[in-house]
Amino acid sequence: MAKTRRYLPLYLMMVPGLLYLLINNYIPMLGIIIAFKQINFRIGILKSPFVGLSNFEFLFKGDAWLITRNTIAYNLLFIVLTPVVAITVAIFLNELKSVMAKKVYQTLILIPYLISIVVVSYLVYALLATDNGFMNNTILPLFGIDPVSWYSSPQYWPVILVVTHIWKGFGYSTIIYYATLVGIDKSYYEAAAIDGAGRWARIWNVTIPCLKSTIITLTLLSIGRMFYSDFGLFYQVPMNSGPLLDVTNTIDTYVYRGLMQSNNIGMSSAAGVYQSVVGFVLVLLANIITSKISKEDALF
Image 1 (cartoon, helix red, strand yellow):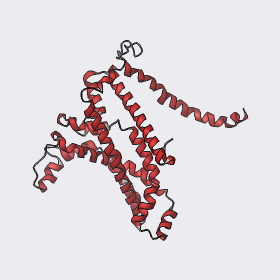
Image 2 (cartoon, one colour):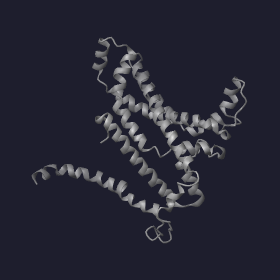
Image 3 (cartoon, helix red, strand yellow):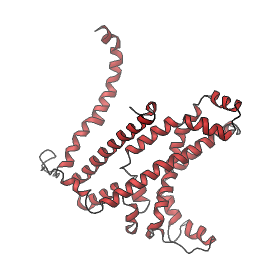
Image 4 (spheres, one colour):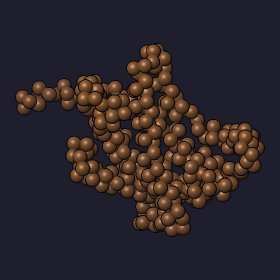
């Protein structure tokens, strides 16, 4: 009892946060019932007819293989390539710190983040527009190549989407990795230099190992969202072009198109449940594998 009185102020400080979690994260989970009903708003959610797993059938017939393949394949590429670019840029910026003026350097480290928050859908269209795009009007003529109808040529879009995603996401990741680099104890580098390690040897034997925990954490979080896709990237950037559906259609865009055609909220909710459950299972599996390899880097 005495211990409870002692920590009572801390418990009271915790109450607002717990209420927020309860209201914002846990109570809405009751809405999972929508995934198993044929919603009729005139009679309400609870009285709407129960349809079992029929809403989930929407995901597993027709283009199920295609959209699942695209969703997984693109996200695997994103998980591998985005950290590689972000880590490379973060290390480059960290190495420049010792040779550049402080004010110039402080401005420079913001550039990756500023690049990544640019509205990419409009810039991609400015580059690839058939009539007045930069690629068709400026770049291709330099090499004597005829203009390309980008929005009806699916063979180019796997590369375009991957490059666009890296362009959009590497700035945020760079800042996270750079913050980790700034916190590395300088004595590690000094000891490596005393042992005769050059710049590249210090990066490989000191910098990269110190980034391991951050890399694993961000990778685990990315794996948890593998069955989700960037809706803007796969819907807005290709301008919802029909000829590109085979290479741009993912679970999110497929469900959106189906929802717009059928206006079936139950099917949309079922897709959300499916994605959440699979994401949760993937995180658990990835965490188990991580704990076997490096227990201290596992999430739990």
